[in-house]
Image (cartoon, rainbow, N blue to C red; front, side, top):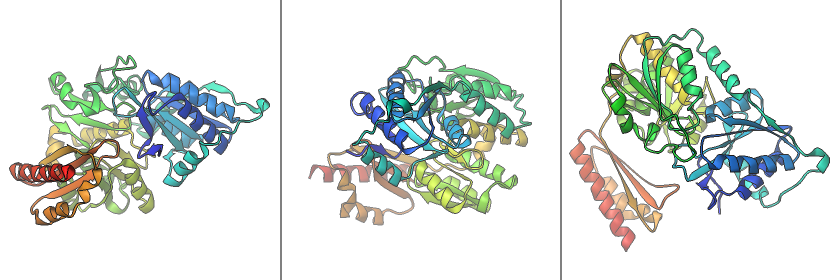
Length: 428
């Protein structure tokens, strides 16, 4: 069974993701790198167990394990880049608490497919070092300060006084660090969902549940919402409307262009990004490139062509001149600094980037290959005036249907036609 998915090794704890698996991964990584490996985790109860298993694997291969504690993924990515080292993030990002994951980073970047395949192969053959060479365990308490100092230096002079901010930390990895940094820059911060108990991460809170924060939006406040490991964020404006990743990309592309940071005047989107942001960028003489769904494909395109800005509607945004992965805090500071410079409101910025209606339907199927049936392609050819994307889920027995266009009733009708067809084909 293939271990690595689109974002590391991820699964239900003690069913798929076991301490034995974590130990093997640690041992293989220890045999691949020199000297040290950094480990961080989000707030899931299973994180401690998996961390100890990883530590045992790493040190059994003769490499030192540096434990960073609870830390956002982008902070660990930064540390591995600064320290020119490897790292493992123990997190299942935005997934429910029963899941966890092992995300391997090398010098700031996620692994290419060929390295993941090599690791999977090597995990069949554990190799122990001589007892004299067993690695040590170092509690790396400097990790938070190292990231904090980088952010302070990068955004030197930023003044967020006057910004009233509700920060939803999703009971996750950002619960302590991100609010402190935002307060340092002068924002008036009210923190919610900051009482992690090991089992409430992402539960009806954070970037996957923006509807929950709306009751706190009063008196000109706006909200920023993170996911469990802090690599993505979205906003809710002062009127209670979502300011999602497409709007973030549109607005901050203007900022980067003004600051002469937008390499090749190009933004990388995925196939799920709204037609509205593409239209907005085109009208501002900014090019767009689309990739498959997944931040690794966005980053791959950015590295290949030296682009600086790319991301997803979910709020996973990469500012490559700031960090090597999606970074919810950096995204927050880029948006808020533009808001301050414009002397505008978030709702006014939101109006700049149009958002065409979208309908998404998930169809549960026995055979995920049914979407390749000729009759599905024939229906796509017949469909006019809207954009249709049909793709299988990478983790569930589901076909995802996305239809987008100017008129909601029309796209809803089209989406249901495809849903009915796929259900029929799956029963045949």
